[in-house]
Image (cartoon, rainbow, N blue to C red; front, top):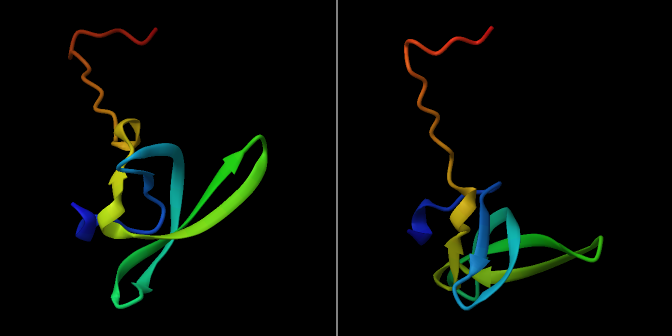
Length: 74
């Protein structure tokens, strides 16, 4: 899963923590990593993490809408 992460994805540390947005994918100490940004009490924070320590945030996956052909929008 880590190799599919890209800039703009919302992630969390596998051990929990705040939701973060990946700013850039890059090499950190010879391994794939990500520069991430997040907020704590309206204060922006940032840090670099190995991709192996990150997971996509559960609610960051695209929602699927199912619309019945008989649905009326009026």
